[in-house]
Image (cartoon, rainbow, N blue to C red):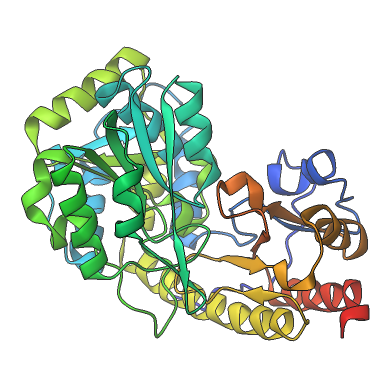
Length: 394
């Protein structure tokens, strides 16, 4: 396989691209002279094998109802075993229209209106949106900060429960903090769910995007196999290979009763995969795709080093150590500014669209989230812009 060209700058403007085409409406940043560092997709093309799969389907020219899922399911099983040491069966895999959809299906299957749904906050903002939209009670357990990273705070959390909680959503690796949870932490989550009779939804969408030198990501099912009767693991190739527009993801459920309930929610919603997504995933979850991911994380690690060094040189700004994902979580509290003030410097001064920390829930208000999965020249440009925008602090 030829080395991927992650340095190539690809103009995405005018391509129905949320990240670039929607940022002026969302943040007031003009895409013609601004930098899009908010939506969590990459500015890179996927492996050639994925592009070839799309072109093969297009060349055939008939886009009927898809079937023959076997290559797709076999690819998922192969990837989980060879990349994560997790042996699964194809019948455990239920296909959803992406993982936000999968979270919604889990809420439909295992909770009712008014039930409590637990998240560890701050956390991926779509969780709260879906929980509230379904009339469930969002229960935020605030993560503790220790040595500049998030930690689970069980002593503080236990008294916060009200007794109506039915389900916990774990973000593993954590978005936006970039933590890879340790085996001990994962076992504590499993024990907590067993003790409080909670269904555990583990969203592992960033499991392949672990920085070199960071702890290894472990799937909950391999760490705590004894909670299979309450565990739903969510995975997808979409984040790893930048194919989020395919809207395809998986709920992997070993327990047959749990799986039947989830499948019932899928059937009730009429969810089924599209014709392109399955072929894209089958091509991505391959030795060629694995080599591409290995090259990707090396490149992202280089971007991380450049971004962290530049941001951390600005007095009052501090980037949380990034173990996984390509999302840098920057603490702006040291500037002494209000969120409106430091956000204005980033949007109006640096002309960068970054996610507002408050949207990630309790504990996020002093942060901004920056997507560094973009060509290195743009990361370097972002650093210079941020240093200029906060030049009076230096």
